[in-house]
Length: 241
Image 1 (cartoon, rainbow, N blue to C red):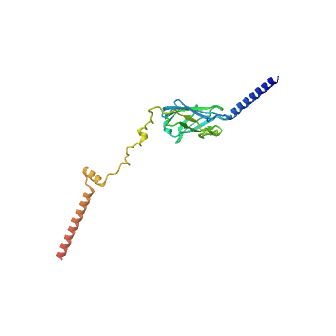
Image 2: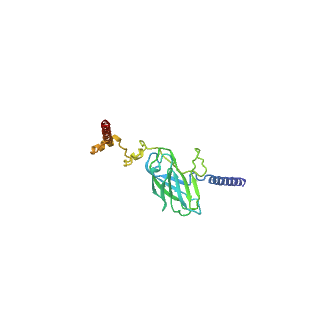
Image 3: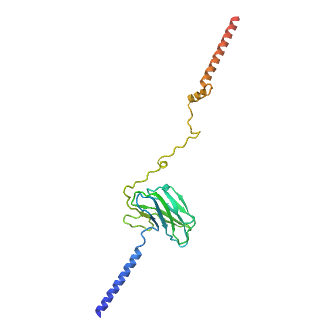
């Protein structure tokens, strides 16, 4: 009888210990990922034309999500991102550091999902997409923190996409000619360089006219002849007196 009671007490203590341990795990093992998550159809470094899908979880019981602003990580330019789809009525706008997608509020309590296509993923191990999530009541959730190397975060971590190593032989895509150098616009009439005076004079002579130098020469000759004639007249008048 004693042994049976002792075994029963030991089993009960083990049960309570197991329950307490499980409870502690549930209390401390909250989600390590951010409340905006990202996944890709081909999460591999240097992969091209990759579709990224973002899911912004709703954390409001009173308002719907109206806007997501995503800051792109280093190696992805806003011009390399094309909008795929998102909530009904939402529109995509590129920014200097990423893009914004917004529109009518989604139903209260519903997650907001959208996708974009990236021209090429950079050669990296992981990509963090800092995100600002706005609700119809003005509330903003900032999923912008980066996890420490130990994996510890503070609850507002940015969504992170882990990448596989690049495929053998994969290389960064070359920029298009329009991206590598600025286009040279055709000169307009106001941009055309003015011709030199000599070229202008030559052009007028070619058109059958006289150059400025020729007109100046003719004028000087007329003055000389006129002055000489006046001098001769004065001398003759003096001689007659």
